[in-house]
Length: 270
Image (cartoon, rainbow, N blue to C red):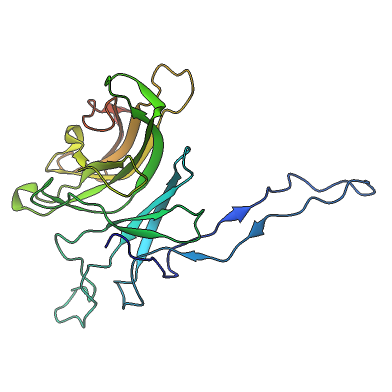
């Protein structure tokens, strides 16, 4: 689907020009009132072309910006490839089921400040890749690329955009587990490298969710370029109800490999 013009209303980004006034002048002030922001027409972003529900449905959008080129790269749960709804034929069945193995993680790219968009689905989510389907719930961030010495991160070596999302089970041995994976691009979404599965978080009894990815972009930081991934892990084998542990992992090689998880919630959190 790469190169498709994205033109539906359900997922839209609104470019905003100007600055917000921080306050109104006092009564009697000679200062002219500050003008408000100017808002352009909505730019339609997503992949469908007036299809029926749920193939026209997108949700949970996220967006980041290349600090060097200015390109915008967004993501969303895009259900373009899921089957259309039907009349339920059995008690408690859903007329709009998710199809096992269908991709959900759509990406969208704009190089003209959001006026027009192209996009597709993240590649590498199948049994020829990581043996999982992309499950949406995107989080994106951009930071400096790793240089050829494999030690230094610098913008002179490029910009890396990271796209974290859920990785759905599609094989019996994966049971109900929901894993976490990260894709990355060095050319503003023109091409995507194969996703890396965060193996430290991949357990067949757990359900990963609510991920958030962030790159250390603070100049002079000793961890400049390190990428962090926050995840909430719902434990399937723990006692009690709603046992959720909040974890953080990090990567110093652009997400090729990941550290052991560190629990940032209380030790007895459940």
